Image (cartoon, rainbow, N blue to C red):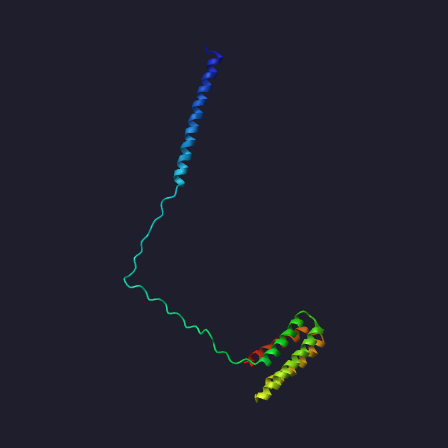
Length: 163
């Protein structure tokens, strides 16, 4: 029979061999994983074109100083005052909108007078003055949305008149 010391030495030797084998397999797996993730060198492709390069695209003509029609400062001022009324209506400030509407009415009357002095017809501006009266009534009744819609239409008409 064997002695207890000899048995434990045999078991210990077998365990050591198993651990060394597992360690060697682990190291081999690590080396294999590192080698497989290594990138291959980039591929360089050479493309040849025809002997005659394509002509460059023509550059579009851009007018640096476009000729705009002369502006009419009186009509522009009236449009600015109407835009001011629009801002107050958006904020639902009726009193401020009425005060701005008075300024818009004065500016429109000045633009109408300036047109008449130049000999132009001011039918559109006279119609704008009448529309401002209906806008005033809408504001006084608290119909801010209706008044705002009317002012937007008037402002577009004035933009068309301005030039």
